[in-house]
Image (cartoon, rainbow, N blue to C red; front, side, top):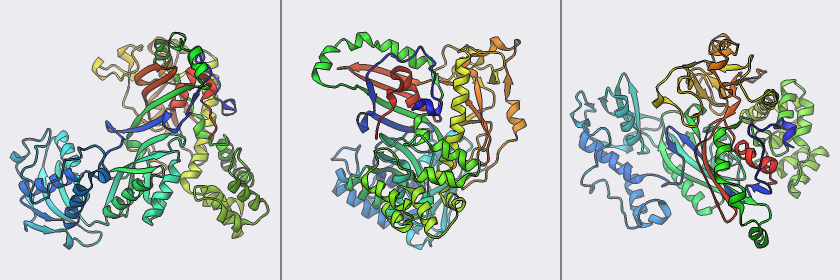
Length: 582
């Protein structure tokens, strides 16, 4: 089946761990996003301790008293039932009230903050949040901080309070108090055996807001435990907090942690990579099999696995990119070529191993009972429900496709683009695994050994850093501001011209052949209607790799760049056994 999406070749010598499976259990595959050196993980739903410290800091430093009865009540509730509200603190630790907290700890890296001059505060030194009108904000104070590191620490600390907002302009940090229903928040979403779109639908439904108010960096695996950062707008902090508690109590595979204020929405530009914890289990897990294979550690040497994974892998778009039926790329191509009738037919055709309810819904659609089919499809079947709704209103196939949510249509289109990339990658590897005349590579510049990125130790230090290039998303983008996530409409799209891109790319000739390796090779992404171009690395590597084997079970941990697929890493050692049935 992987061959159908052009996943064919191997970068190493081929798989050598046989009869092993991936994702036997949901928690065998754990994914954690990395944002600005911050790992998404389980934590407190809300850091009330820091929020109280923020108010204390403002009172001591800016001489402003903020009265926040809601926060006071929340602190009392938290202290009464710590196990319900917090995960990572001692059971007997309590959060002191705003009035009783004696002193505030010094902020790391800004211990001299009190000596900084030019602080400007509001006239009144007593402030009741009741008087902040809806969708309004009130300036508390301004402070001049010339050092970016110090500003970042201050921003991070103050934004742990749900109603404090900060803004920097010409090295001056302005601190605001904002009405509860006018803020933008970020949070960490943990989901188990759910896709990202479905989890967002549930959260939006609970909050009674538009699904489009939730932004994220991309879909995460369904059959897995995943942690990813999200942002949400037009919502009260206390409403979001209550929903987080409700989801925690329901234990339905969705949890919300670390609610914080955020200045801008989440986008691919903020994502640095992903951390993976993966368990590979023998397909035959009975006791006899385990006894017979007790010498597994000798057969499948840990060092050999490390060698394979450190050497690199073909940067294919993984099977997840193509959907459960592995046909998203076909739908994408039909949309690009304006064959809307065929696209609708494929979206509505049966999928292997579907539930009886879904099968019945598809049959109702086939019988042109569109309203009944619409009601029977669960909420997570976004495309199917959109088509049924459109057909019940007499809309054309073209209009039905156009009405599908933008992010879902983008999945189809990017799947088609990914299919073409995979073919080009396979064709290139078939020609050899060394750098060749005619390859496209990114220009490089000399850097010090301290700047070398981990995972590239076999490349000489003089050719490691990409010159003035940001590796953003699935494509190489040459300015950190020009990539606009398909899930974030808050910024206008600004793309450099193709000629500017080509200034960063060079073609391998006899003269520069010795200056590059296969790790420098990039492949262009096909530009089509609705798709932006760019370049994607042919070969990627893992970093921070850990491998161990215990009782015939293989444990792996590693980090990848945000556009790489862990399944393509695992494929190098177990082959096409990475496929599973959901």
